[in-house]
Image (cartoon, rainbow, N blue to C red; front, side, top):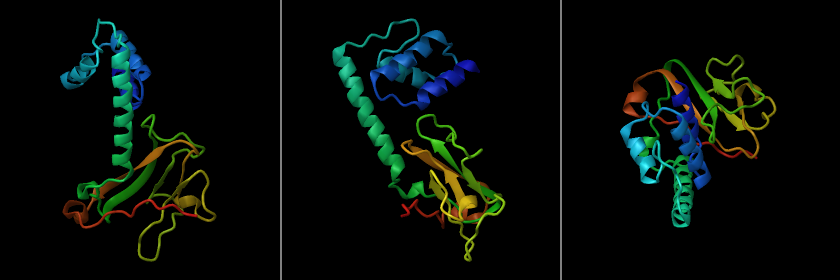
Length: 188
């Protein structure tokens, strides 16, 4: 269990330089790898990270790894920032039980650590403001807009984040893909 947690921690911090790969190598050398699938082990081996072998990329390989990490990081951010495929909008407008929106830290891939106990808004939030048409406006930012505290999830200035919309007990719109939530819009 501890090994899996360490591997997930390293994997969550997507390599942006060979330093991150050195950290991954340290974990590979010090922890059992029997819980890691063969494909992942193959990816690591392709850049020189293998259990029992030293990871010592030469200057040429360091340059390649640095460029590849920068391109991969930029590509991942571009894809996640604005999903371009219609299949990225596969959400229902109604649910049987409840919904929640949670703010996650892009670097740790865990809930954003803020002054809020949970940086989230849910249909179960007491005092949640619901619009006349049944929709709900959810606000994200370091401070809540005046009067919107119950509809607000806190973020940290300078820290990248993403959200996860969870639907518990989706109804037919989930399956026939007839609705999607609105985009996050910058407020002045």
